[in-house]
Image (cartoon, rainbow, N blue to C red; front, side, top):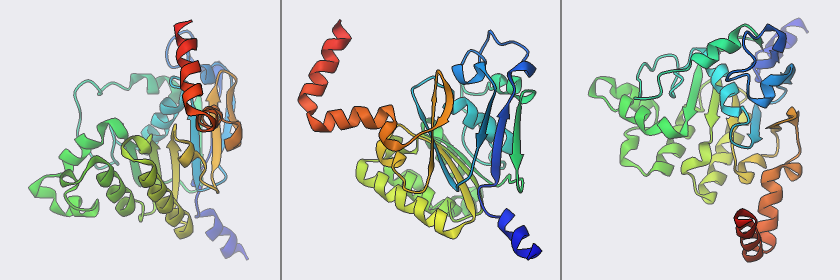
Length: 259
């Protein structure tokens, strides 16, 4: 019995909890503590292999995901512990150091294998691994992805990388994917869940990805972080109005903008 209990602990989610305590912060007036979610204490519990963060731009989703990536030792420009490249203008993540004293991550077990994907720096990562000296590394991610379209390279990367045990952090993976390709990505997530060897935390603005059937959906906003149903999300409500009457929806939205 004890053996079965121990083995169950080795299944995802590996990251079980994030605890933030505001009273341990040094300077609440400056970034990142100016972000609403960091204005009060919170505990974020992970109970499923797939977790999805949603919310408006600037609500703190990426900052929290970056902090998790930093705790794993991943390259914060995109990559794993083994990728040491840099891109101009994105080398400073000093704000994450300010979260260290007031944010605690609970693991069971601690996992440091995996990947942090940033949609805007993915091409830089592909250039990094496209090196004659690292042919085996490039093969590991699906071959020369520079020869494929942006969307196809994303899918090839996901299909190859997510076979491995670890924690995978994706910031807007839909950025290069058409709606059809987003459905292909959901099939890859299903394979990850079925294998039971990886945890995925992703940020998205796509209702298609938000609708993954066995994921916890958390919304980030002025009231903090809370679990939410797909149908209650702002993204779903906006797109529902659009599909109901797209021309009227756009016209009304444009008129509101002018006012």
